[in-house]
Image (cartoon, rainbow, N blue to C red; front, side, top):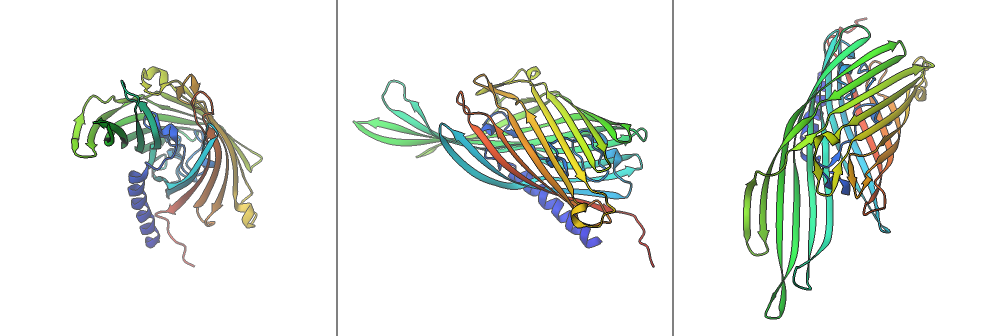
Length: 419
């Protein structure tokens, strides 16, 4: 038993270090905008259910979608969740196509009860991730017939350290509070090759600008869950607006000398996060089926900010999930599995050339119990989706996403039976 928890703790520390250092592993050109591409991976079963879970309890796994769910953690349970992902992106533009593969940790989470009516949890996930490369951007040199070429590479991202607390006011009504510590660094390297003309001789010089943009801030939120009946639950969340403070360090070099080194630039704009509201339902029927439905809205219009390449607009998210689990009394292995399917649609928070960058995906998932004495389970999810469209200068991105979550339960302070 002690060895098992030592292994869990090792995985916890290793995953925290890995996520904090490698959330830059993205490969989407749309991560060029704002703080990058928003993380779409969640904990436990959620990835196979259309990313819907606002009304689901945390009675068998960590549900990071609603802090109120933490009030339903069983008294002697200690939950862990270690997430991994592998994603293949296929980019299409003007008849050209290329693909790449990215693998990384996606989350690390722990949760435990504080009393019979309350629970607490900590989750670390990438909030956003950045990873893009733009090559051979041609620009004309004013007053001449020559051009110079620029390559731009971006990386980094923002981490989300989320603290959740849930309290049950009654057997049917649960409330929750959440606080997110957001922090991270986004880098951009811009390398330009410029022709130099002297005495009818053309040579080249290379100038590089390396920017490190640091962001940090804190965001508050809350949630509730209400059991309308034995088989139906309503959930709601709100995440308040927040401002991430920004600082910049820039290093500029030429092919022959350092022009400027580690100069702090204080006029970089802070980044504003919008008010977010969400509602969800969960319904159980026929003893083996459960249906989840979520709707969320982000009020980006109220932030009054824009990106150099686009405008922020209000964003709507819809998620739908269906799960089937056989009766536990049936001993066959396949009857102990949980089967999931879902769909989610996001109309995008950015408008480029009067076109929204939309995202939609279908999801499949399966849960495999690790033993019969606990809720420990391997949750596997697969998503196929697309972003953007080949029009008005946009790029269409199709992706395959595989997620694996080790959702583990430890039973604490329980006496062993002695025969």
